[in-house]
Amino acid sequence: MSTKSINDFWYGIKLLIKKNIEVDRYKLKESISIFNLLQKSTIGISVVGFLIGLISMLHNLTEPSSVGPSMAVALIIVFYSTILCLVILSPAKYILSKIERRINNNT
Image 1 (cartoon, rainbow, N blue to C red):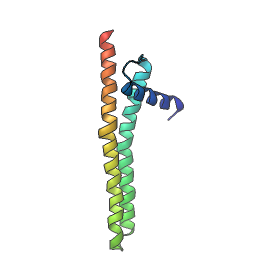
Image 2 (image 1 turned 135 degrees about the horizontal axis):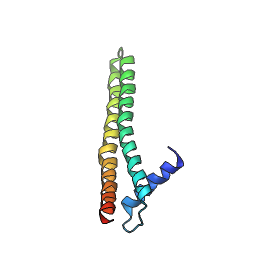
Image 3 (image 1 turned 180 degrees about the vertical axis):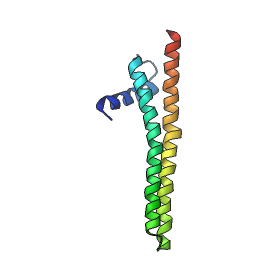
Image 4 (image 1 turned 90 degrees about the vertical axis):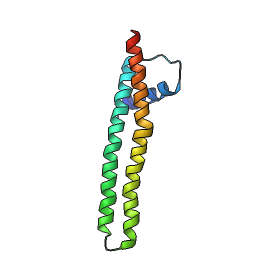
């Protein structure tokens, strides 16, 4: 992510938090695309994290006591990324899209 992308991300956060803020259409569209990218990235990261935990579990399969913690790592990464995607990123993207639709309907 470039500095411009980070600024657009923070602009989207500002739009979510503040009520009366002048909206730049281009930045709003960029913010929505960044939230979309983050949403897709969390899914990819959860798959990679699950595979890392699964490989660790299969590597230590001879020790039954290490299977549980390795599987826990694999599942907790999937759980956290799902929570991040569904509880934070999806509603934020939905609200920003709603703001964009409202602006497009007014003009």
